[in-house]
Length: 383
Image (cartoon, rainbow, N blue to C red; front, side, top):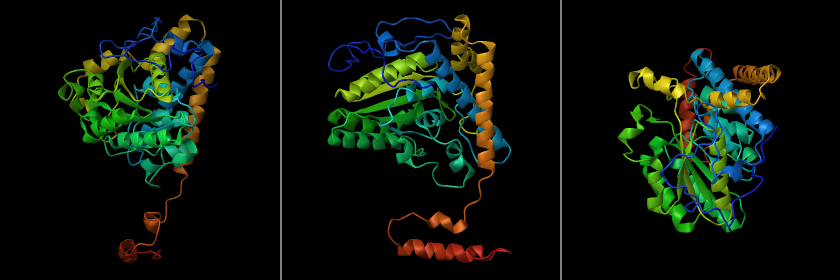
């Protein structure tokens, strides 16, 4: 089952006025609390009025599947099948809730952790892992799923998204560009420059910050003395803080921001307050910089468990349905494992392919040097 990318009803006016809706930085929007209790919010109910039991079950299945994908990828790295993996454990609601709000013609620019968003956009299972196995320099064709390949340079994708949004504006369409980044990226110059450009030209772009509390080993409290969403209004960009572990709040907040952009209202900054429950990457040891008690506290806010609690209270998550969801997740993981472990290693010299559109003498010289280096190995055929 899929989730429609537009709510059943919408707020009045020519576009969503986030300021008039109270989407400032005073509170955190929450519709489904940590105990799985549903709360109404007059500002946001219209944006999720179409989300009934079946739609919520579909969102729950998405989160279960992407959590299983994440666990399998982590295991593959530990077993030597991947060189590295950046886990998303704990951020499922932020990614699935926002990813399912998008239209197919919207374009996503992400960091290296948005596996859930890529899954929502239709990225192939093996494509999620190719670059982490080292068999390719990118995982998928961006134009096949309207999502750029992950950006490793912190914050650079916000400028790419803003530039793309200006192109959308010039084309006269109502698509939207969406930039995903973490709390640490907000201290980068690129993000600040992107906000300036987006505000100045009222670009149709949504800045989606997943505040997972840590920029590698640095807690957010060391770089932001106020909520991160407070920064955007200084550039003329309205902002909203949502409970990033609440898939309904994320969906509602993202839909409102997308509607504002589509209607000519310009950019919006969303701070999804969530938590990275695993390491920054599989090369990281988070026990060196955070207490176990902090992790236990956030486990109580788990995004998957709260939806499960709500569905159980409604009698919607039957044993049969749960068995089917878990079976789907396991099947996806098995398919991904089989696909990635059977990939053939690329030819060594293929690293020089497609670097330039036209022949380049400097690159040709490097290729020749590398070819001669490879021939020094026993058994090399010199290719």
